Image (cartoon, rainbow, N blue to C red; front, side):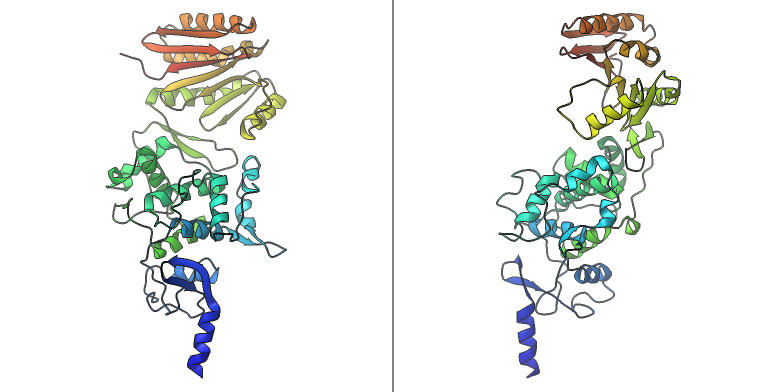
Length: 413
């Protein structure tokens, strides 16, 4: 009689989600699984994930911690770990997670494609959610969602999703950090994969083992439950430490998030950024700094409009609000200079300060820019390319009232 009752209970609890051919998960209420004793490194993570309903065990009382996880299963686990039931009983983003997201990002989380429930096939809604957030690319895994997921591809997904809640990490920083963490980055698919691997280590979510990341190995069920325990709870993480001695970096503002490390192409670029940022207070207007950009505006109203235009991605607003904007990403200084009446005049002080730091004789460059400003104001298109002191400078405009200026961060000698 007892045996019959047990068989009936198992039959009722069998999950409809296939883990692999011939295997199904079941809800387990026991204190542990036969193959995950209390001494197992993943015991706490397994039991937490089961308790939260993120994963289940198998009919024979096992968890199979070393079995691989498929793309579909991992997507489901990630999204469920970030969700909770709302007042109506519907699963959606957990309030604690939403609270981490700045206003200019929040709309992304409420894309109508995002859902935490199963569809047909069972994983389709998690796939749509992942595509809406860029966690996976369109068609990247189409027809292959039941394939086992590699660690490097999981790193890409994790870093993208975590970026919404805790801010971005720059590629240049990841490029410096990765080789300090892992000896096997050369086995990764490409540079982008190497950057994503480095970023999840910097986030403290995937830190490898004894200096190896094993990028092409499959994510196991035990590894996956640990990841989805750390994903919603940063207090459990152990971010990898980076030695930045001799590295040209500064701490930069990430609007709505904690300040982040930004690595410059060379020491000169760092010096220019640091100097200009420290002198922003002397500008005849208002300023800001974000993501290694320095902005200069006539007043707070113009600054606010520029922020909404750039961060809320208002593509219908084609107005020019900033007098001047310096960018320090890559191997070129990028400068946006407004040419409406008064814009270039207010911007002349910081612009001249910048030019004086990188040129021994900045006057020829100033004259070239002044000529371009006049042409832009007269509604002429500008397309100038010159070389001064072994640095290429390119100035362009498309008829709108601003100039795009690119100056090499390295002197071509």
